[in-house]
Image 1 (cartoon, rainbow, N blue to C red):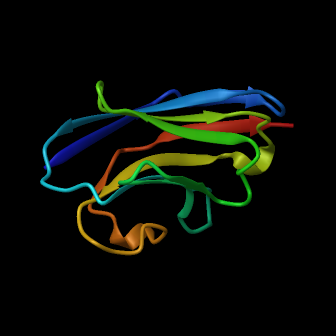
Image 2: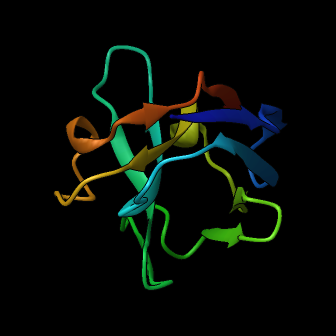
Length: 123
């Protein structure tokens, strides 16, 4: 079982930056991929950044030029650095872990989820 705990959300003005953290505890035999997702009110959950087992990171095209995801394996923490934020980035942000082979871009494939951290960007 894994436990994921996000932090770092808040309210910023457009153009600002935030860094989200996801502290991971517990154990699972395999972490096939890790992901950052977000969900805005009235919208579906969408992938923001996916961290693959081989170290590759891929991004949603909406954030590719502005967000950067990374992992500190020694501390077992995920990060999401978000720059040049826009109001459309306003959402609840979640980190998640997938423990089996599946589509890393599909939120339904993820087994473990944090409780989320709110990001609000004002214009």
